[in-house]
Image 1 (cartoon, rainbow, N blue to C red):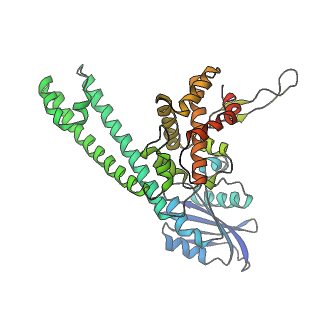
Image 2 (image 1 turned 135 degrees about the vertical axis):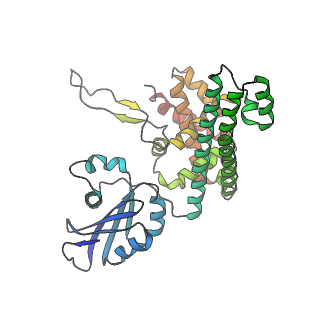
Image 3 (image 1 turned 180 degrees about the vertical axis):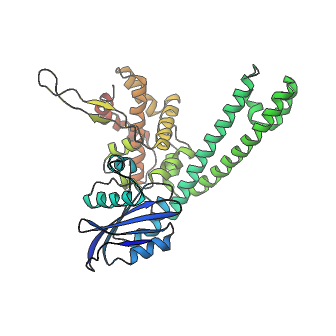
Length: 370
């Protein structure tokens, strides 16, 4: 369905907002501070491309981050002069004001795009990198599902006052022996059913792990990161797949915040004497959870290991009076900085050189106490 409002000159500048759904996409085209046309088309590359090709002039397109945003970005990027995949959290307050439907939301996106109020969400141009990220996401999803199955099995055993051993939980060879030992037919039937789901999920996790490990071998930086304390193949591949390129971040504190271990400052008002109130530092809630888990997990693993620069740094920070949770985040920031530097220089890990960062990062660590 096409609704034309008025005809624009042939070389106009168009700002196009797209409200994308599984079956259909609403397109609102803004030019000259007015919505000049709206389209309702199937969510297919040919259908959307036909609309974009029909516009003669400079074209700027935007749609919100979602499950199909990467696919749309890689296939429509060459159809327009600028394509922005925007953060829906930034648009929430504006889009929730007044009436809301697919056409109105698309028009609001077009107006926000013209005004420059959108925050861009990075998308990779490489199909190979996208495939690696998909396998990483699948692996972590299957692991979470396997953990859920394990928790259900343990909870079912607790209903009968039992604690299932780890060998019986994961190894089929020990299950029958343990079930014969407890001699509870009702519980045995329930566990056999739950084990079907767990075994299938665990097998899927192993398949995904093999695939992401195979794809990760193409990148030397993943091999270099494996030599860092606390960083293994899964965490190294996860960090690489989610970050994709080192040039996304102008400064290291931007990288820290994106990974959920940086600090954001907020201050407002003055005290009774007219002096500015002290700034409040806190961790950002809008962070990539997968990256945060990988970075913090690596920091904790390095802290628990013996004889490495990250453990030494953690002990020094704690001795200086910082609480342990903030010290862990300080170590995670240092680890991210080291990995970022290795990526920039394509060099392997050198603990002696990393020691030079300790003095540089001490002021940063000291302000992280809350």
